[in-house]
Length: 58
Image (cartoon, rainbow, N blue to C red; front, side):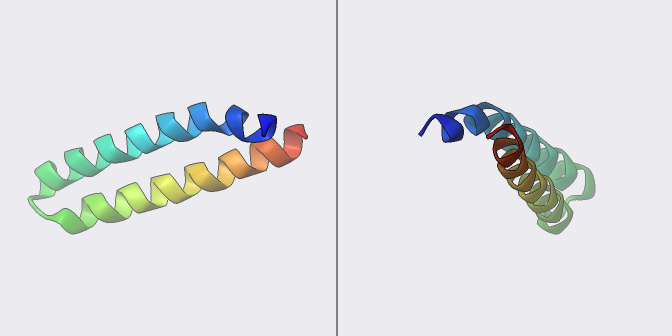
């Protein structure tokens, strides 16, 4: 259980950044799709990197 608590903070920060990028791109382009794909790419990268960090540390 301790392993998963390490990855919660970077994951939460990453999802916050992904949401902010989504809002920024959607307002800049007046379309939902660029913001959605940017948020999906950023969010999936954060999930993969947080999983890799926990595997590397333990």
